[in-house]
Image (cartoon, rainbow, N blue to C red):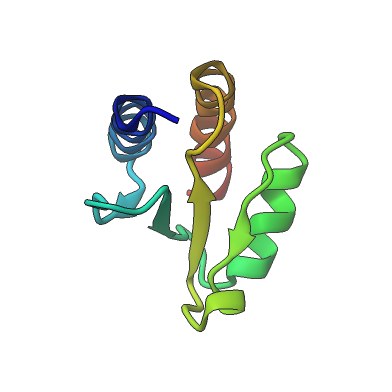
Length: 94
């Protein structure tokens, strides 16, 4: 895969999520993003995300409770389609 594809995906996901109010640090070399969950329980947050057809991994699985891990090594269109769900999700829990 071309590194420009990862950069494009990262920019779309990072900019979209932060514009909705999610907190995260922009990765420099990874193909995933760790995002602070807007509720304390990251497992519950992942379950709420599933209801919006969003598959994310708990931060607890990586020793980072209160965060989720979102991979952006997917098709650009997949990220575009997921962003409205992420927006609805943060509005639901706020």
